[in-house]
Image (tube, rainbow, N blue to C red; front, side, top):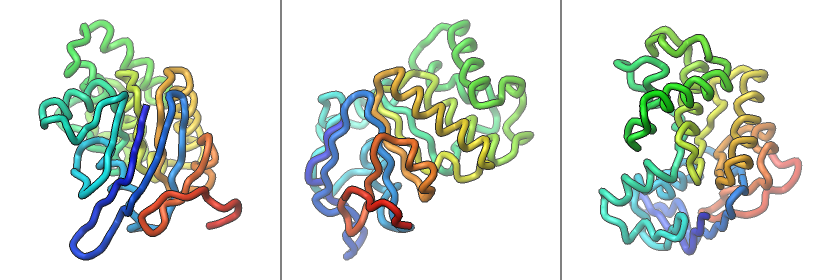
Length: 223
């Protein structure tokens, strides 16, 4: 589902990613941990085609994203990728339900199916009664749950989650983590979870550490 080979990215003189390799099969869910500034969010942005690497190759479902023009990359993101942004990116002029439905609107899904799928995901993250609320009435933790629902609603082949539980209380965080893991498995998707939380990372199939620009198996018990 996802193949990364020799990925490199540099900001000025500083190398962030250096000959990074990663292979993910359908149904596989990996957590990536590392120090702040190690390049975890940069890696997700490169995989999503939101930024361009300096070297290397990224293939999603057999498509080399470097060979796609901007329109084709946009279509790939809409169809294949669900991204939980650390900063939410919830649109304030839409209701909560409309925010969740947005990926389905862009894909041309019928209104009745859009509403049903959005409601299903909102209920799964504990916001089933907040669909008609404007985002300004929700807390930061609730907005993060909306972002998770929106990322999953179009049943993506690849889920990218950037600190999806950073603003959540422990019980709600567990609910969201279980939903991510369960959905990735049920839909046969691949998933990458970027997190500082050891507890969150352990919900994935395997844990990797991003260190000096490369991914390595994370040592048990390491902070």
